[in-house]
Length: 505
Image (cartoon, rainbow, N blue to C red):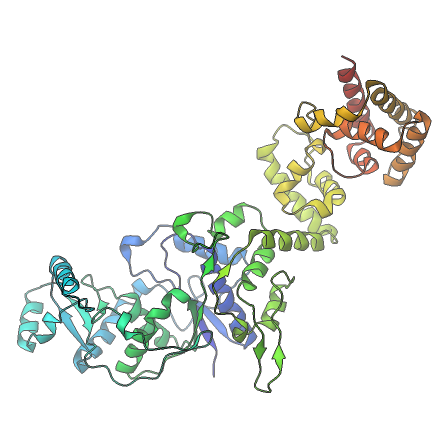
């Protein structure tokens, strides 16, 4: 069997995390089984269309490293890939359903439909429509169509042929949920655009989709979709519905609630590999049993897995049915470890340094110490402290601008230091640096620092605290020798003298 999947977002806004995970799982499954996947744009609801949304979806997928095989900009045998350009196809399938008696035209106005729903609800009925137009004669229907009356096309749920039982790769055998469906669901709207139900069934068949991987929110619609396949005498694809992602507080993630757009993570300078790793393992939480009765354990939710490794290990049978909380702390953990991997490569480090340089043009525009080469040296001494590259300026601002001695943190550092000890430490270090200005390298600076400390008779902790205050005004950071090596002798001496004079006054 040819494995072909599709990711079919609506252009109603920015791509969100749930949508990206759906695209990711389609990508993983297709590549694991030697198949391909399509990006299909479901733009049949013109009232909700957001200009630029398609470009945003494509940009987010490209950033995440998910390259679709066919779709906008990647033409192939299944196009066009915008549903709004496939209307004739949906109309032809609607005619088939009308001719076979599996569908009928409804001429009821929106006001009449609303009144009917209210009347049925007051009567205690579960029906949402009274089937008034089902009983129109062919002649009456033809006359009203010729007269230009607006109509919709409804499925006739009184004439449903036998169909296969609903079964899902993730959720297993499903109970019959027809009772939850609206009465005679709408297939074609009065503007001649199809509903999602008709369009998705027609497109999945016409494009030769073998597997449909989509969100759990579409699970209640599966009986209707299987009815349509049966009414049209089509073989349905296999279905896998993905459990919904939740916010840390347990609420459902939603475009309307805020920071779930992929664009936010792009702007937030998160590593795409970390985000993909994080999303892939959200819900990948149970062991899969193979036909040979052996068990494959699912990876832990913070396992570092590259995209090729995810493809090799991916198994839909490992997905849990439970809704999954996306924990930001896990993303931070993964992001930090992906960065730590990249620090081992000078070219990758320099690439990140260029990114930080671009960020600092906004945050520290007046600093002369923001060349990518200089930032790469700062990265080297910060390494394990960096969770996100945008943190570098706040982790060690003193490498780029003069220390802020007025902060509460800086002031608290002085509480354990007497004026005399502070001055002795700074004066001794200044003399050493002025006497040996050509000292370079961390090891050379370390020897100089320890020699200066020994000459003062101060405890090492007191000496180092005084230098750390003068050079950084922060309690934690790289070692003092590393700090001096990055700053250079001239900047270090200037800071020591400035801090000395400030404490004197």
